[in-house]
Length: 110
Length: 122
Image 1 (tube, rainbow over the protein chains, first blue to last red):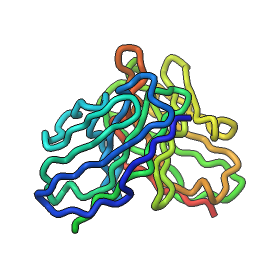
Image 2: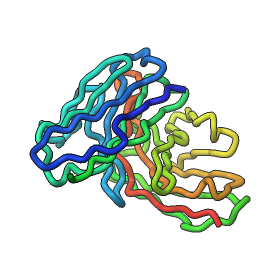
Image 3: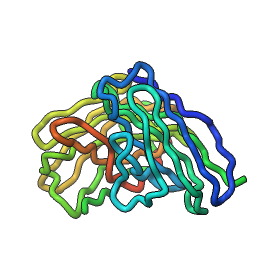
Image 4: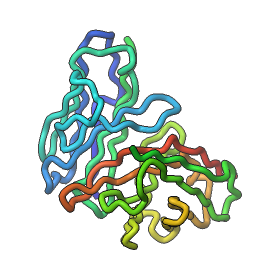
């Protein structure tokens, strides 16, 4: 099973600041860019933000970007808007034995 | 645009079988690029993939739940279902149905998702 470890667990920032969330895969993803990012707000289902490590899903603002390959991946929000404060999850689909998610990163208002 | 909606009892007795249904609208349940999936999230915790099925009859399950979970399809009703047997309190969670996308023959990400339904095991 591929384990995804996200850091930090909680990120406290102000609107307008830049947010960076990390996701580390162990072992390394054989399909090196098979990683997605989701946003989840309280009481809502997760929403797809990024697939293929760096491709924005339909309707996702360009302030969201993804990067990385193999082991280390990053989700960046360039300038935080009030609606961006939520929990973010990474998910790997390199292994079809079991699809796994990171434990989540809570982005909170400072 | 495909939309998904879960339904089922919110309370299940321990040792019984949890049964949920996901209604698919806005698109065909027979589309080849979607594998119909279930994912769960215990209160305040992370996400766990349960399993998927496809109209071709193929399917796959999380090894940790394979012995208890069954995902099935009813094309006539445009619905797919989850049955989880011998439930315990540890199975209490919000259960989401979602589409597992297939791109160029490879499995991908989950999109879209249903709104989720809370199931409590008493």
